[in-house]
Image (cartoon, rainbow, N blue to C red; front, top):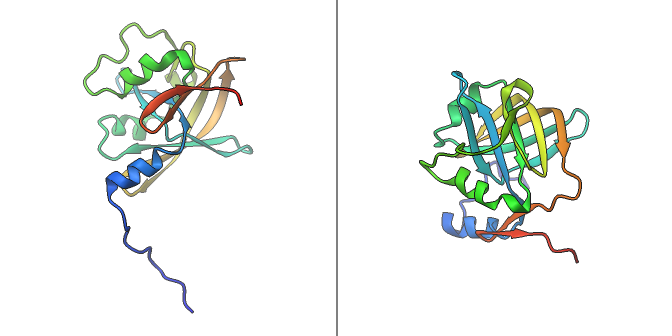
Length: 169
């Protein structure tokens, strides 16, 4: 039997798919870069994952419709700031459209100028190695040039459309 060359049409709606994806608990990040004129850019994302230890690679994805897509495509570097449990308000602010995202945010320039958010549980400073257009998103693969973590920091988690903190079993 010859295997099919294409996937079958989905048997579910986009809303059902989103609900099912929401059952996968994730960490929460703010991905940052700078525009060509130096303006800081940042957005909340939970589509972060490790790819490789050697070389050190991570990935994240961004909607093709995102206003910040051009800046992330063009920039040589970005940072992935893994949020701590006490940074829920930052996650909400960087997810909101039209918000003054950077007002009062304590940050420092990392490798290539990407902003590193103070208090993050971890940061990954990445060279923008490759990009792949897939469906309605772009998958970014970053080569990690520097990483840091805050020992003992509790992560901010996202599940089923709500934020959580970790609870040891």
